[in-house]
Length: 299
Ligand code: PRT
Ligand code: ZN
Image 1 (cartoon, rainbow, N blue to C red):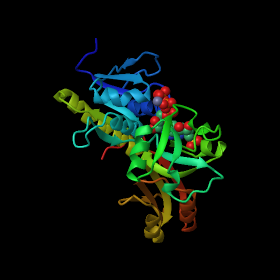
Image 2 (image 1 turned 120 degrees about the vertical axis):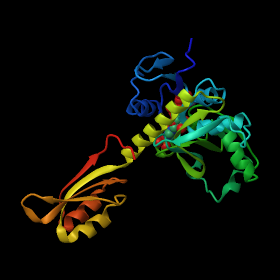
Image 3 (image 1 turned 30 degrees about the horizontal axis):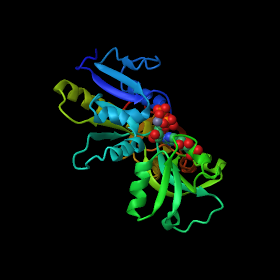
Image 4 (image 1 turned 180 degrees about the vertical axis):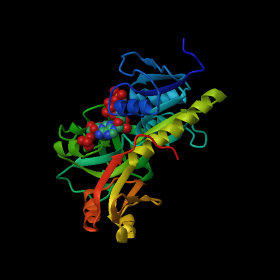
C-alpha cells in the first residue's frame, strides 16, 4: 500500500531521459537506489518514492493524480494534453521547471531530393508520425489538407519504403534523417524535459517538500551552467580581463604573494570559458587560468 504522505515522482524507466532524470534526483540529495528493476523505489532520507514507467505513461499519471510530480519530455506531455482535449484555461498539470536535458524538436522531414518551397507543399501529402495530435494542430492552423498514419518506431524508414510522403518525428542531431535520405523542413514543436506537478489538493508537508526540491533542482541546473574561474592577470589589464568574462559581475581580486604586477581574479561565471576566450586572456598577459566545475549552488 502506498503511503499517501510520501511524495511520488514518476520518471522514465529506461530510455533517453532515464539516466539524466536519475542523476538530477540524486544530485538533489535524494538517497535512492534507482538501479533496481521494481516499479517503485523508496528514498532512504526523504519521504519520496520514485515510480519508473514508460515515458508515454507519465503525463497520464500526473493528470490522473496518481503521482505528484513527473519528469517527462514536453513533446509527450503536449501530445497527451491534446489527446485529452485539455482546456488550456484549466490545465490538468503545471509545468514547474524546464530542465536542461532531453532537448529535441518535432519536425516535418521529406526526402532529400524533393524540392521544398513552403508549408503548402504538404497539401494532399501522407505523413507518418508518432505524434498525430501535435502534427494535426500544426497543419490545421496552416490550413493544410493532409492524411497521417501512426508508426511508433522506425518512422524514418516510411518514405524510403514508399509508405509516406513525409515524416513528423523527433530530431536532435539530424543523423537519423541523414542516414535515411531525409531533410528537415519545418520544426513544429521545440521540446526539452520538464518537471510537472499534478493539480488538486496537496498537503502542506508535500508542498514544502516540492518547494525544497524545486530550489535544489534550480541549484543543480545553475551549477551545471556555471564555472568557477581563477586566473592571474596584470594589474593594468584587470578591466579588459573582466570584460572578456561574461556573467561574472563581481569578481574577487586579491594580491599574490611576492608578485606586485599581477593579481589573482576569481569569479563564478554563468557560462563556460571557451578556448578562444582563454587564448584572448593569455594574450592580455593572464596566466594560470583555471576553469573549475561547480558542485552545488544556492543564491
Ligand atoms: O520506452 P519508452 O516509451 O519510455 O521510451 P521511448 O522509446 O518512447 O522514448 P525515448 O527514450 O527514445 O525518448 C524519450 C524522450 O527523449 C522523448 O520523448 C524526447 O522528449 C526526448 N528526446 C530527445 C528524444 C530525442 N532527443 C531523439 N533524438 N527522443 C527520441 N529521439 C529519437 C528520434 O525519434 C529519432 O528516432 O532519436 C532519433 C533522432 O535522433 P538524431 O540525433 O539522429 O536526430
Ligand atoms: Zn515512449
